[in-house]
Length: 245
Ligand code: C5P
Figure 1 (cartoon, rainbow, N blue to C red):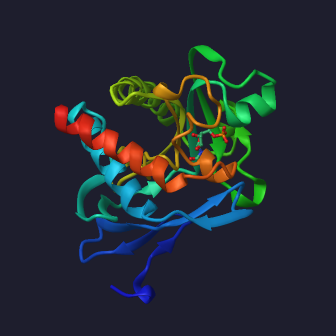
Figure 2: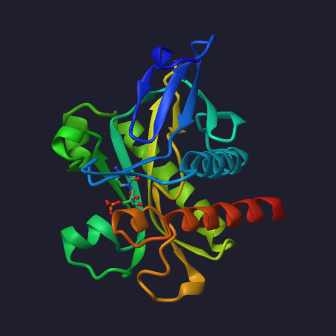
C-alpha cells in the first residue's frame, strides 16, 4: 500500500482501494481540523481511538439491524468497509442545544430539546456546509424523498441506541453527525465514523462545568486542553461498556 494508490484523502481519513472493487480500506489519521479546516492540528493517537470507537459502535448497530459500511478492523487505525457512494449530506441529530444550533437560534447552551432534532447540511466546503431543508435536498436532487425519509428514520433509531449506550458510559450524548452512502445495489448504508470527532459527548460526573465536561472535539475547537486524555477516556469507557455487554 503506497501513497500513490490512495483513492481519496479527506480531513480525517485516507481511503485505499483493495483487490475487491466492492471493498475499500479506510485509514484513520491523527490530523484534526475545525471550522471548515481553518484550524488545523493533530491529536495524538486520534486515528486509532476513532477507528476503535467507530468499529465497536458500528458492530453494535449492525447487531440491532442497522446496515453500515463496516466489515472489520484489520489494524488499530484501519477499517475495511463496503464501497459506497457517499450522499453529500451531513445528517446531524441533536438532543441538547450546542454549537451551531445555539449560534443560529439563540437557544442557550445546554437546553434539553423536547424531542430529537434531525438536520441536514450540504457537504460542500466551498459553501461552508450550509443548513438544508427537505425541499432544497429534493430540488438539488441530493437524495430522493424515500431516501430522506429512510435517513430520518435511521438517524432517530441510531440516536436512541447511542443515547442509551453512552448513558451506560456515564456520558451524555449532546449531538452527533452521520453520513450515509449507497452501495452497488443502491442500498442505503450508514458510513463514515461515529467518534469524539463527530459527536458532542459530556461527562456526567463533571456536572454543569462547561469546560471540564467536554470529552470530544470541542476541546480542540475551543482550545480547552487535555484533548488526547478526553479521547482516551471515551475509548476506555466504550470498551468497558462493550465488554460488559
Ligand atoms: O457545529 P454543529 O453544532 O452544527 O455540529 C453538530 C454536530 O455535528 C457536532 O457533534 C459536530 O461534532 C458534528 N459535526 C461533524 N462534522 C462537521 C460538522 C459537524 O462531525 N463537518
